[in-house]
Length: 362
Image (tube, rainbow, N blue to C red; front, side, top):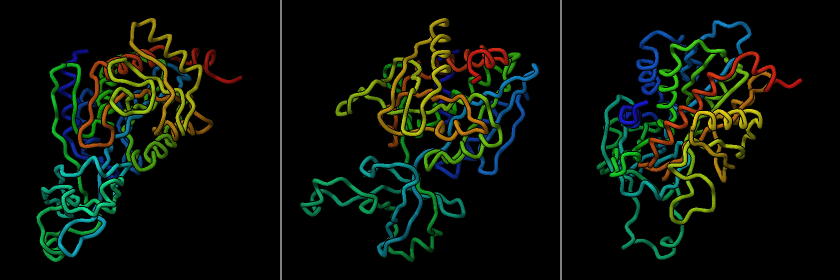
């Protein structure tokens, strides 16, 4: 797997726009690349999650699902102030302070784009008691240069229009590192693509389902709808996670550069112990960097994937990322490649007999 090619492909995904409920451009990009050799059957659920299916030629093959959400966090227009500035409603978990004085992009209902700035009162003229408290969504607005509510409306601005964070792609001096917009979770989407490329010509012992889910950032909704269609025996969620290697973080295990992070527990899921140990064994046998951790906050699509009909054998592979849910996130390409290898080798190692002898309760 070529690191440079992987990085370039990830950049392409980072530069596509798609907050929750508006993920179709990412899905189209995935479909064009993953299915260019017609090795997968492609379908969608009614929420817009895209499903790539590679059927096994072996009878009684268990279903194996890998899901990565396509959506990024952002905002919707909540209202228009009389002075023309835009009130915002967050889409996903956002700390308003991270976007202050960064570039904003508004897309009206006709598709016209407006450049602007996420605004907040300057510290020089701020009330004293506000200086020491955390910013709230009510304090945040976006300024697109309109001078009245009517001017904004005349430009087609209305409640529900999408407002995007922007962030340039940053190539650090260390070639293993990359920073950019929507790293959560285009990093996972890129891995899905590479899993497909690695396995498209393999005779697998599982029915493989690779799924780009929608609306994870607002409640893992696409995972719920897509898993209800597939009902897999195995389900892996693939998502970024916060790191504990920057100044001021609470103690924790995850940091960039240590390989694939196997998530043992979070607020919505406890990983299947047999699958954890199976993947660790795969990692050791194939010299793939990996480690276990317990999440100190947040959740993933696995919270819904585990509830496939009859229950699915579930865990999350986490991709450590600095500066989560902000205009620019930073990640290790090596971590992504190691995670790709770990999942790919796990899929290749599972078949009906392995499922029956190691994983199936009896």
